Picture (cartoon, rainbow over the protein chains, first blue to last red):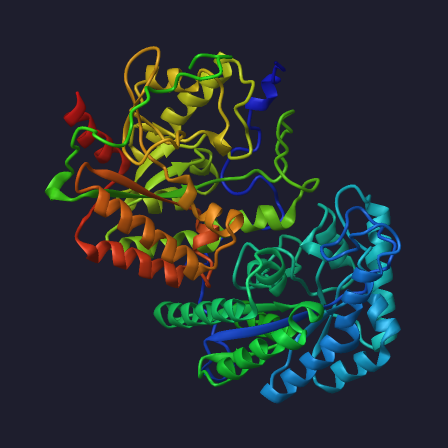
Length: 308
Length: 293
């Protein structure tokens, strides 16, 4: 039997607030209320991940959805790329049909490789969020600060070059960061990241960056791929979430947010896309719904809550 | 327990058929208790040789932030739904939450909830603790909760369900009345301890929201339906001898916007049914103890 050192039952960070300084504590239900434009109470944020998986996995950890079989894994390489060739176009049509705008969390490699797609996203009035270099561009504490700065800088520069615009938002792969990530993102001039799922409204980190929480529980990946539910069960959960949030917004007199995280190779399949279109039509008909891009929500929140 | 023996000697075998009648107050057939786990998980805890706290090197952002959702958003959402339908909580408390986020603990206390210890942090595991270390966490728990809430803890749910062979003997020696760590029954049962008395109250781990959503992959509605089915069966069987149903919860799971609505419907069903004695852990253990003493 091993013996635990005395330090195992000592607690040097046991005190008021968190055991870290990344952001201060606050209770969402006691904050100053936020009111979305046009008297809408629930901001519906569609966020689509555009992911290119190199057939040879690399990086500090393997991204969710990455290659599975021994090299060469044609099965997963092509099934993921299906999303970039077919699924995402289907989604763009669905958004246009519903008259809604979305954010696209985009790997630099996607921006460089698929200019027609970037043009369609921009023409459609959607937002591009930076989503690392490619799906090997994962970040964790083992990467080291210099390599992490280089990775994030490279992703930002390549996305800006390929799209003509420097993104305001950042989504890390698997939402995983190191203790340096927030500062690096701030230094790169980003306004917000989407990685911290501890809240349901924007809030500010200690260093000034904003978190726009992209709830991982409400993603097609979590519900369909991990929990193995059908597309209709996913749609039912999204409606249940919307119904709860709109009732809570009315009760508490403050706006709420419903993030819907979509993956083209998951929700863009022929037998699932109907569930998305049905949900969009339903939510678009609700008086409480404000379909907004990430930057719109962050901008509105900054303006109202911080008088920016 | 019998350390090292194949049968740990936690309790006598006691078949479900033919047991003495347990009667709950008001002629109710099933005692229903709700356990919100109010927890603090450290972002970068010391590493225990037998269990990693997080799947990534710190910070494991999604895992830490998911649990933090309880203390910023979903605790109040869950607590309001419970209060609305008349369910008090019996809190499984990471006692360091009294220091980190006293606002959460105060809210639970103001609602009349009972507190028992779930260790100091849910990221410190008890395996291999010395007796002195284990006594220290029990004494810390008693003192911390008393200081923060005025309540003397009566029960224990081991931090992250991690034990030593002496845990049950020690908590009985300190005068605690119940453990939530044994999952062998749907009724309150006696536990074998070296000194004093200790009851096992069913914590119904199989209907824990974590099991529902992350072991059995249920949707919010499927989980709510599971609670109703569990309740219906135990309420029926409890006519012979009072049964216990626990609803173990984590706000960051049940308080998510897509799950809380169906959960509220399950609570409403139980509250309106008429066969449930909705109670706190201490009351259930006391009512049982009076009948078996």
